[in-house]
Image 1 (cartoon, helix red, strand yellow):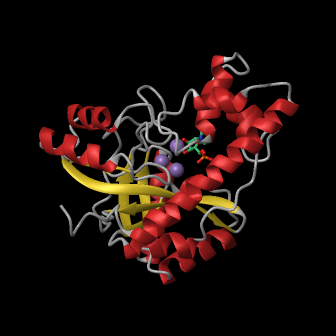
Image 2 (cartoon, protein in one colour):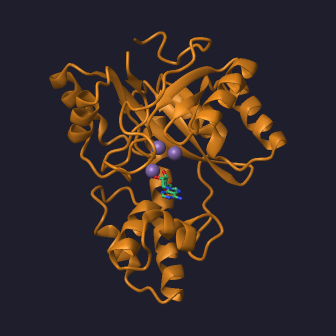
Length: 276
Ligand code: AMP
Ligand code: MN
Ligand code: MN
Ligand code: MN
């Protein structure tokens, strides 16, 4: 079975509408698919319908922005009820923080001599409720301020760069609480991406587990093969279930297309064990 439990649509910072993501997942041979937009569940109804029409298994998901030890961590909520009020209210609060950040980010870019960035980024936004750094990166690329999205992050948008605006996202406790309230499983996305000290990473995993967090992404488009091996061991050490997801955003972007990742080691307990 090909199971891909991490992907984005144009309801957050992906480029394809939910239906097109479903069609692409199906064409790539995915059997079970989760849409997991950043801090947003507005694409799930369309995604679920498209998956049903294709005969593709569907798991409703979300990727929640969290601040832990002053750094951003992404926590996936898988098999959630998107209508659950605490979850909806929590995500709405994060989207509001994103909007405020976007205003400040545009002011910082203005200080770099780049005007009109807020309106320019909004032209790349399909869901007016959700603006992210990628929309600014697409504007900067379009205007010739950088040669790639990666360079937009390296020069302006990345942590500590000229137009970086720190945000206090949800706490780990809040995010896990909302996911559990919505009947889902909480999974730490792409653990290899965080620049924590070993002590901080241990605190992250330990706290997450004690709050009711259930697993980590072991195989993701964000991990190198060596990192997948490393996080296989981490999952076994901490007693975490394991997930697999491409983190697909756009055709041709990122390391993995939908469904195009290695399999999980069969030493691991998959997060989907009870669902699929
Ligand atoms: P945000 O949640 O709005 O702060 O933006 C984070 C998103 O930006 C991630 O989910 C990725 O899609 C994207 N991203 C982060 N770092 C980079 C990078 N170095 N190059 C390209 N995209 C990135
Ligand atoms: Mn993203
Ligand atoms: Mn992420
Ligand atoms: Mn993601």
